[in-house]
Image (tube, rainbow, N blue to C red; front, side):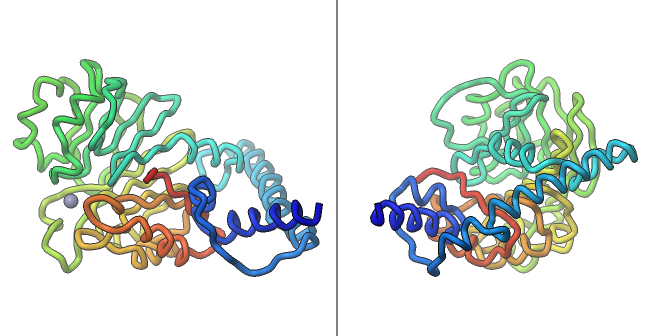
Length: 296
Ligand SMILES: [Zn+2]
């Protein structure tokens, strides 16, 4: 029995200490952390109690927001819905993202897709580099009805998928759009010192508005002033370095933005190591939750 309790506490420590605890636990990686006691875990100041309190506050906020007609405010949502939204986001590899939502199935920069679902209602492209604009993978996810959202500066570079693009929105950085009922904003995505993503290329990240939540997909960018100014509930940011910010700089950006949840991208294959997610999670300050979605 004592052994069981020790095992339980050990598991708890692993989950609490590592920002990407769920993934790590599944993979069997063991991390050590500070001792905790049963009293601390189950007492009034415990994480569960805090979350419950937050949920109640959020519920109150939703009601207050409804009354004031401001239900679109990011903080006026309950904790359960926030969790559902993060759960609806997949990161396959690099910055290849899928979000399944009431409004449809949304892909951002599909890349190295293992299957050919052709179920995309929307395909968003951030920029023209091969690991973000991949005609081969776009053909695996898109169909005749798919709506494309692509930087206007790429208009002459998408010949390979021109047959598929019957419905498209050509976007510029720093604008707000509504396409087929989906609201989103574009955020400039560029390097501040490195040459790989010049600001003049007019490439973008996106803030998608889904179920009252703002989801920031940063694209290939450094921690620019425009990125720091983004307001969002969930942020997907590149952490692999070389062509983008590295894990520590990405964590600093997240601490500045302070979303509810941060999801690292762009590491562990072409650039960056799998371990970068630990560096990232270790440098992101509470109460931001870090969820690592790429499976290795
Ligand atoms: Zn790039």
